[in-house]
Amino acid sequence: MAGYIGARSVSLSTTVANAQDVTATDTTPEVTIINNTHEDTDGGREGKVIFKGQQSGGEESTLAEIRAAHDGSSDDEKGKISFKTNDGNDSNSPTERWLITSEGHFKAAANGYGIDFLLLKEVVQLQMALFLMIMKKELGHQFLKMEVQVELLWLFTVVHILTLK
Image (cartoon, rainbow, N blue to C red):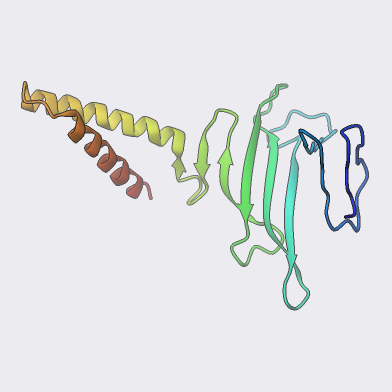
């Protein structure tokens, strides 16, 4: 195994040109990627892990990429992480599919971040609150039982997700 790293005190700070595997073994193994450029730009201080493979004809292609970077342009510690995959014609620039921001937004990149799961939760909660207010007003004391409310929540969630395109 080329590139084997034993105890934590050992560090690998140069490029490993021909390593087949890099293994970190310890009671709490970790890998740290440090960008030593002093900057506060959005997308700066980036680091990434690139997954490549060779096709049957020997062509090397980028299959996927995980990229972490600074989120925003302030002198702070905010970070974001993105996950990219190759859809078959991306060459060496995979398409971003998922993004997690420093604010905790978990976004699906379909149609330019068409689904923000944190906002989706808030929208569904507002829809349910409005629906329940209407039902209470319409039904008065004959208000729905808890089991029915839970089923309706799932129904509204599914309907909302399907209409986000």
